[in-house]
Length: 112
Image (tube, rainbow, N blue to C red):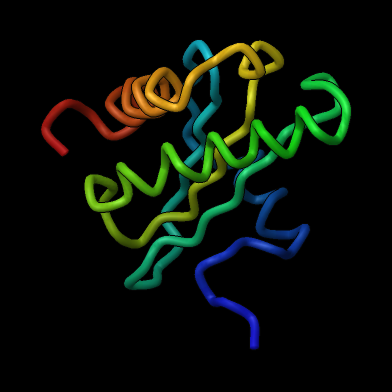
């Protein structure tokens, strides 16, 4: 059974890229868009610019862990896309978490 809180469809990604609000930070780019649901859907992406498959997988794991620690601070009802920057390979998990938090504050504002 598929988890409903994961973005999979190309149309959802295209909608995020075209209409979403984005903010970049040192290690990640955050793109968000309201989805009309009562829960967040999320996706984590690392392009080939990040490196070989081992480096891309590590980048996605870092993004996933950083998001997991901050998950309760995100408002509900959004599609969330986190894209790894090429320099994420040299980062520690705490650095990625701070980077995601900084991008989140710019997208949603300080009060959320």
